Each structure stands twice: as structure tokens, then as C-alpha cells.
Image (cartoon, rainbow, N blue to C red):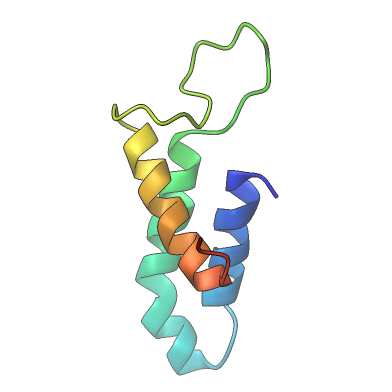
Length: 78
């Protein structure tokens, strides 16, 4: 599962359940979706982007933080 899939799975989990659960989780789901949209993984060899790297520059740090949250929600945190 790639990082985008992990975040998407977490958003789906947050968006499921009863109405109260969905309303309560809506801000976090929205934040994860928007953070993932800031940087999409690109497999092109000549791609100059961060490539989901460990760089501290924005948006890489944001993606790493979103992945920590997503992995906790998905139960896949190391």
C-alpha cells in the first residue's frame, strides 16, 4: 500500500459509521484529504519533487505527519 492509499483508507474509516461519528471525524478526514492532495507521489524518473521523502521541507513534513495519523487510524502504526 502506498502512502496515498494509506491516507485514503484512513479517510474512509473516518467517514464510515453513524452520523455522530462521521460529523465528529469530518474535520480530521478533511485535513487528511487536503494534506494528501498537496503532494501526489510521482514515479517518473525525472520527477524533481520530494517523492514522499524524509525532507523536512513543506509539504514533505506534512505528508509524514498525515501518514502517522493515517497509520494510527488504520492500525498499521509501527
